[in-house]
Image (cartoon, rainbow, N blue to C red; front, side, top):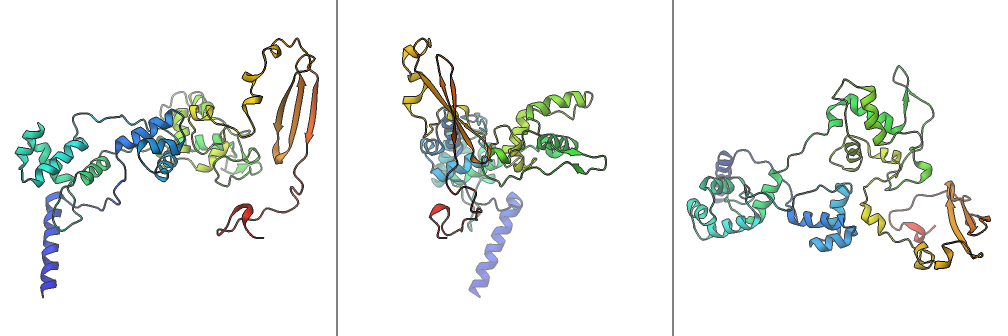
Length: 351
């Protein structure tokens, strides 16, 4: 009898909360970092720092940093560092929770924070926690609710305009359609979903670049303003998961072949294992510059498809060039590739 009474009281209280605030869907799991953490993370990424170092500077774990970078496709969301004074800050929400715990009323809290009483009342009504039996206000959950409500996702232009979507996707993939809609020509290579496809799996020889597509739209549709899109919007449709307009497999059609955007400063700071300071052009002796002294050679490497490679050696004074054939490793192509097992992948798995 007592259990039935408690259940009835909880349902009545939940019904009162629903009538007070409206029907409240479950928002999911609270975030583990705030806006200022994401701003600090992307600021470090813009400087060229690696994801681990950027996450450490922002005060979050490496898995969180990798998740932010992957979900954004490497595209900086360009969040402003601070919000305007029109909205409550996290420090003000902490003061509201403290004053409310001390028993202060809405007008008293508004007077202390120099805010309108309606602002405080609306904050206590909208962003209070309803996961417990009674209505509670916590600063962390209130900040989470506020950031979730502040999102204003816009529908991508390629999602709304089917004709524009088909035009961009066909030009990007390099497909040619017949009058009845059939795809003409042989099927191109298929991308397996990895970050940077091998050059043999790319279709950028047949496809158009986003810049070419954006400029060609003005020629093919001179009087249709709805058939306009920038090349950056096409890139973001490929990189950012939330866009969802173009297939991620079309990243193989890009000139770079990347499925994620990499900041230019990070690319400039990338260190290659086979390049040391001794072979850099900036480190060569001064007498090599004028090509007056013979005997100085320059070497380079040409890597082709199917792991083929040719080395070039050029004498700087006479321009005498030698090509060095670099054979493939012993056993290459003799054994068919087998899928790695989930227990132990790579070369260490048992055969």
